[in-house]
Length: 86
Image 1 (tube, rainbow, N blue to C red):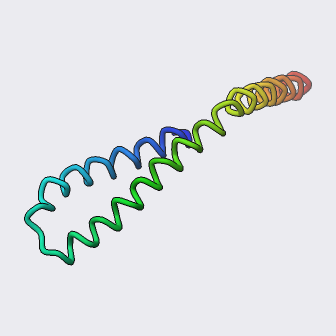
Image 2: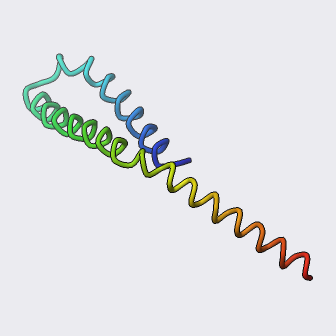
Image 3: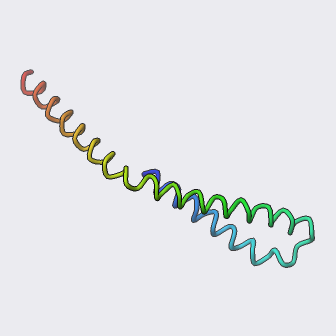
């Protein structure tokens, strides 16, 4: 699983938990509501940061993939050469 999938899975789990709690929060006391508000601010920060991360990383992902594919091909060819020599 890649970084993007890991972050998406983490965000999905957090989003589901957040949605479940949001339904119950209107019944909570003031202390819990204050804590919820603090967490909502952190959620917004998380959401914003992950969107920025994808925008910044996405262009480099294809270059990284191409470089890793090239390295993979070179390693396979080198291993084949050694295997054939043995």
